[in-house]
Length: 608
Ligand code: M6R
Image 1: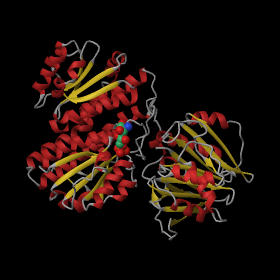
Image 2: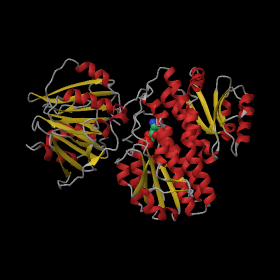
Image 3: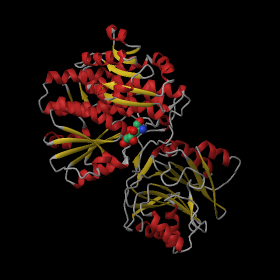
């Protein structure tokens, strides 16, 4: 949510900032701005809209400054507009600040500051920060920032520059991530590594309540209480090529087509096919505690929550441990009954989702074992949990999550398999599951070969305004995920339901204008789903179904079918979701929607 980038070094900063902002644009894209020190003054430009618009605005400015910062915004307080875009400035225009997060007590602070003569230019909560720093300024920027931040309630990742100390940048965080890139005679700061990787892979992650004073030779980190902190320099686990479209028109399509490899990357070295088992290094130290937990609680948001629902079915089936799934946003506030005998597993692609992070903290506070399943290496949740497992799916840039989902399900299957083998699952059953897992990448490839067939279905689908997605058992969460994918990128209203629930209400919606999308693969609930299809056809609905290869009977009943290869029932979601990702993608493209950056969304939701 919002992207921050800053640079201090020897190179002209303006193009570097614009490039960095483009890499971060997936985090927020309703307005953007840059500021830099130019001849003892702060020069800036802001623009409503995408970075490309800001780029047009600054075109022709040939500034030699080599210290500056930039921001791409996802609005929380104040509409997307030029005045609300960051950076924000103090009244004397000597300090510039960009901010990610939310300042909860901004209204009171603003009143106090106004009474002291500070003049506000925006409707944002962020602007109070820069005025507070100016109010606290006593000749030492670092001291003033620390003092100002003591007055603030809420979350922040901030980057500050000032004409008072023009050869430094100041970065501080509480709740919103910041990472510092250490290059040769240049130092960068960003809200994630994607803005740094083309300059350096050596990074320092700031922790909550830490502040860095940055110059071109590196960064000195202290806590907000002014205690020195020694930071380790770590390596970013990817390089530039992972952040490029690689010949695809959109990141989302690239990421859909990467899935044969990314699903395998999640299992590589972990899946023990011969033994019918799995070994996850990151969880080894706590696997005994997991198996003896009274229950596992899986907590997540959005697509990751859908993966958690599948995880519940997998773990209960293979390992016979009771599992509960909770929206992290509910879990954090409903004072859940959890104790030392529980294990809480937070599932999150970004590792930064504010609600999921708060759920982790709540679980830790109550003594539970808190585990993380993240894609982004070094992310806050990866670092704050007791132990965890990475997806190894590579950077996911498209705002709609695709490859992270299939990797989450595959990784949950590995966890279920490992726990199962410690519990009641026989070696033979374990081998059957492991064999099926091994075949998934090739089977995904087979489904991807039908992309043009799915594109043709999308050409008909795009004319509809509503859709129902129905599935049962392991495929019920896939129905939810299919509907989410469709609505978030094509803006077509879509709802997912367990197929049997249809007759308890949604059936009222069905007429010849209503596309109903079924998952009707050959599994233990196949016959029942067929009955549901009959019910829809009897009411004139337009039926698209994902069916098992060669199922002519079902094909006859439906208007459109997409065939998928056979796998065991519990792993079906990894396959059945692929046609839904493609259907959403092609529909959105045909409708002219911005697939990678859909309206109102952002890749990682770091505010409540
Ligand atoms: O990074 P996370 O997995 O924690 O993100 C959770 C949701 O915000 C995310 O899955 C969101 O629903 C996506 N836009 C889905 O495509």
